[in-house]
Length: 399
Image 1 (cartoon, one colour):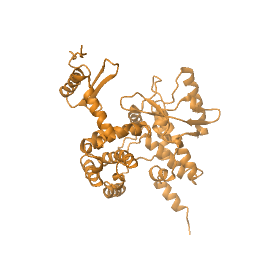
Image 2 (cartoon, rainbow, N blue to C red):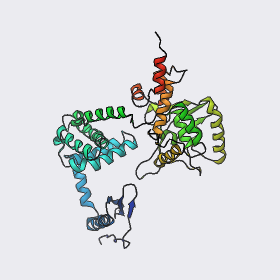
Image 3 (cartoon, rainbow, N blue to C red):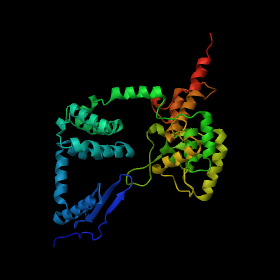
Image 4 (cartoon, rainbow, N blue to C red):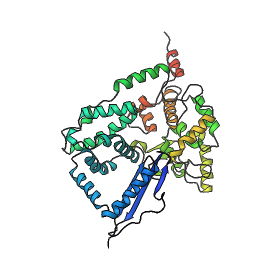
């Protein structure tokens, strides 16, 4: 007797509205007679479309248990003659060779911005001109950032094809999208003073810490302004990593937010991210008291909400924004509203410009504290000389 799945009587069964994407998601999971799992999932703009896709999944199961479709997919993956087939084949390899958040970004970009347009092309026809035309279209219709992410994801896939001998070379290597336009935009932003970032002065940093104390945002802000921790590193910090006796904070992990997965603890961004950060002597007593209170109440994590639950990476940006705007950094003065990334940039700039009585720290010390391997990254994207720093340097000379 052939196994059949009963279509749900509830019209909304296996459907839910996704607030983040503003689409209707569906999920069908059924068990075949051999114990294997039949799974179909996706989304649609309207509830009716999503319901029809759900019903189609039930019909597919009742027809042949989904064997034909999966066999077709397997054959295409093994042949991998087109870009979609090759992508499906190599993505498991890429998953094990990059950070979870990077892999999630690759999957999103490929599925939404690359494969719908180029997926059916044979690998040998995915050439530089075709890629350039498509990425220029993405840049114009969506944004340069979307095009850049699509380029990175596609390059990763095609680099494996080139290494495997499927194509002579990676065609993405010669593709440059909007380089001239980005340069001109940077010049215009520099003229107008719009950098997209906010470097805080020492006095502004002190003011923000005072105003945010007692809120859930205080610890993430403190860890950014006084230790230069990345947001994920701050959220992944346990009190057991804060060694009061030795006066160091051990950075060994980070918290990340992945689609469909709860708050996840993963290794740092790189090997350089594993580091011991000396605790400034002026806040050692404060952290000692905070750790004692946490241990007394059974709180494991450093960054928690009012109820003692660990802050989620998905929500911390909003929590910090509420705190900084309440402290007066609301953008009304024409400056950007500070973010957790700006706290890290401010900290590294203070080290470079003000530490050691204005002499700054040595380059190898700066990148060690930042958890970087390349001083150029720190100097290009994080460190900035403010107006006071420039004036101090100029006025230090006399003829």
